[in-house]
Length: 468
Image (cartoon, rainbow, N blue to C red; front, top):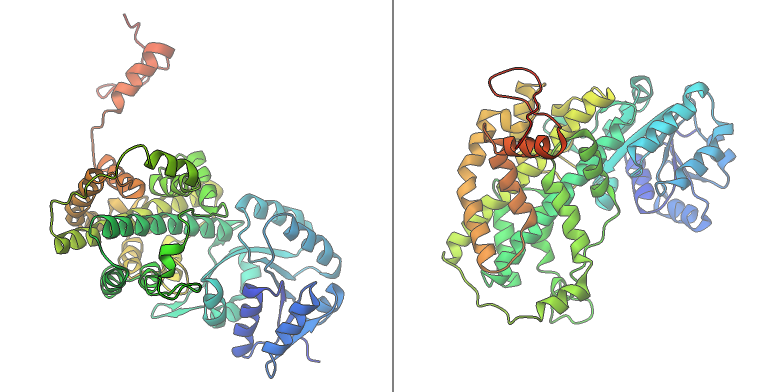
């Protein structure tokens, strides 16, 4: 059998669909999984395609042409290290080993260092798009070193999602840049999902919208400035019938307790370490944590009678305000994530091109949206842009949407509805837009009780006062 051009370890949903994607593009590929059932399933689904499956790790490596291009799609953590230990004796200098899972970027740094003396190129690559993306074209964020990427470029560009600006893959940056970028992507994803949830809560509880109306609203929004994957699938969610009782909609019988795998939390942790404010992402993580307290929430909810619905604007005005509020919040989510990515690039010497990252997020990935077109323009015009709010055109666009957000927040507060990400988005925008804040008082307090010193507006240096 001919030598395969690419190898895949882990033939679950994502791995198998990426294999079939490659095969559809004429790429000869070999797969390996400890499960013989997964091996058989690959061969069945790949019948008639240039696909083969190996029974052992050694046979798998020997089935590949050199330099070997091997991707692991296995659960993050110890399993990745176990696979590296198993395959390492069969590899040689110049081979490329890719971790395509959601590994923490510090683990990727450690693995790069561990393999450095072997000459094996280790690539941490974020992959976004889910099952459909893997099969039809994902967004991919590889990092590591340019020599390793050069051996992958032609294959990855063929299988990536395609937009008018090119394939949704690029060499993101040095070291763990790929996994760091995917982590930030996921943090933004957390924030936007929570935003949509907050908007949904107001439409349902204050606007009294039925599922059919909710479907129509989100479908309409997806035709304009809010066009995005998450808005698109949200519209579809409201039409899905319950598998158990077809007279009900599935969304109404799903428990309001949101799960998470930790990537949003990782984003918040890194942002705190780098002193980059990402409150929209932080609040989205906290909201999922709070949702887990289902029993406690129900007990507290029973303390008082449900308040009467209050709404000072008519339904169409409310929907228009919610549109602008969602746009504003989505923009802030991107702004905070990209600010963090820029800071991390400088701190960790990733050399990330933010405009290129935004470009590859335009197709295939979960946070793709039409808004990214305007965001990319800002970074193309100024590659050193620290924060998107410094782009006056984009800033003025949010100024126009602010009134709608304020209306929505007032409505939510009048109706006792929590809107943590919408609220934090407005606070972030207003604080970042204020040249003279009230933080001088904090410095006075710190110097008062701890002699921590303060700076002055009229002199250089640090000062201390003996407070009375």
